[in-house]
Length: 145
Image (cartoon, rainbow, N blue to C red; front, side):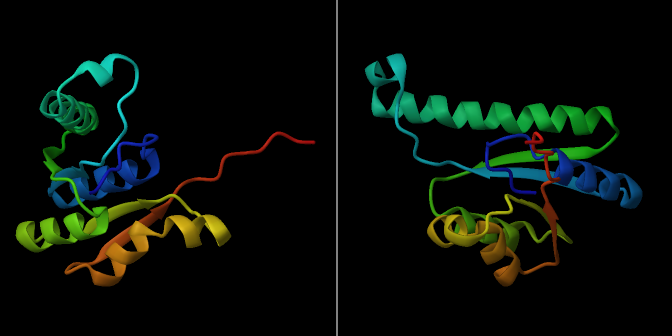
């Protein structure tokens, strides 16, 4: 299950957890390192220290989700994949790891946002060497006008 380090993918994690428990399967949470501009005092770090700090933050993010899943009774492993195009890195990992199923959470972008930002989930699902469960983020209720 690829996670992008963004807002918590609760909907997809719930689906993955339910299936892992039902089929006594192991979950593998992965994320791809992404270039992020330094902020605040991070500008003072060497490039190596900065990249290590970002990689550790991503590993911690995955581990937080893994701990919740383990507490629910799931077997979970995690991996931070090297920097690169996320879809390509995820597909490479799927080829190496050979999962029975990949669970993805879609951001649900449409129109111009999708055209300019692309859809990593769509690219992964089209080229995946295994079946893909695409979970759409639950709609949030907008305040009434």
